[in-house]
Image (cartoon, rainbow, N blue to C red; front, side, top):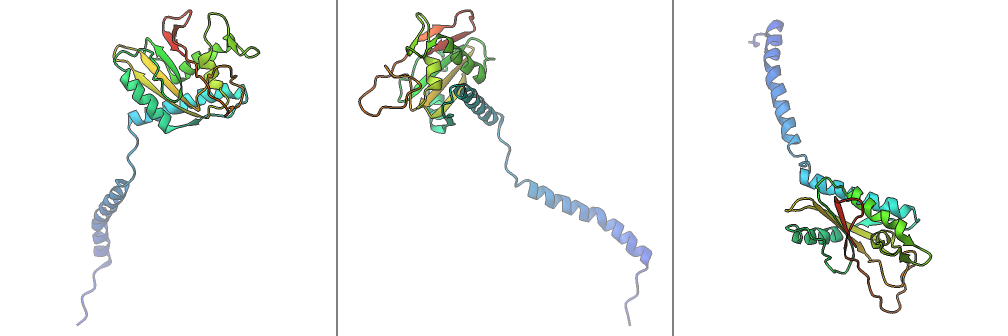
Length: 215
């Protein structure tokens, strides 16, 4: 005996009843797949990436003006700068690490200073640099600027640290280092003979109590 046929209107009712269940199962499956997507970077991670981009862009903008090779971001240098910054976090004194790299320091009494502004402050020393005599103007500093444009420096790594005492400290490392005695930032490296690296101490920026700069 053949099974009784189900009226069409009953089939439609059953389909309508099953539709929400099937839809819910499909949505659950989609959610499960979406949960496997990578977790977005944390705010701290985003800040580090943003600051790294800003440091690099600001440096290369200055180097473009002298047609020198652009710098590349180096994680090793950034890590070195960050570790030194953490050691100086409590007092944020502009003390050099005296490591194997070139180094520029910036301190701001308030915490609004950006990487771009730090690099711009260093690059303003261009007005005190005499390329013909490869010297700074009397009583002025120009070592931050010459390190930025040093032709043989190819890698950059920086950090921005909030001070426990207030303000921010920014540190940039350069490899190979620049500011060698009796050499111009426009020269290529002379591999023969030893070189003595010059450094400059902290200096108050004239006309502004918000910033201090160390060479």
